[in-house]
Amino acid sequence: MPFSVTTTQIKLTGVEPAIDSLEIAGQVVDFTAYVNSLTDITTGTPYTATLNGFDTEADAFTVVIPVANRQNWQSITNYLKTLGFTGSHNEIIINWLNSEGYTGGFNVAFYDYWEVTEGLEGSFTDKFGAWRQ
Image (cartoon, rainbow, N blue to C red):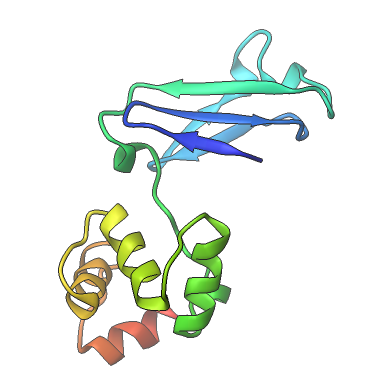
């Protein structure tokens, strides 16, 4: 399903089956609670859903890499490429971490991400090992 994110909204467009709910920034948006919701849309019918009210893109959209794609740097970058990230392996990962609000070099940004987002402790190797599982 194609989607776009701006600083204040997420826009979903497609001909997918109806959507019952979305989870955004840990909050569930339940479309089944509304009259004429997306659950009324039949498969194959184009629709656009716009969610407003986010101060920044980061507030609206967080990339979570599935565990199956965390096994090595190649699998991480291959997954991020499916989301539109481009560049070398390091550039892709750095761009993703920057989009999540983590800056600095590769190791520093990942280290901070694992500590803050995942609550992992220990060395870089320890954190990467725990994150892969």
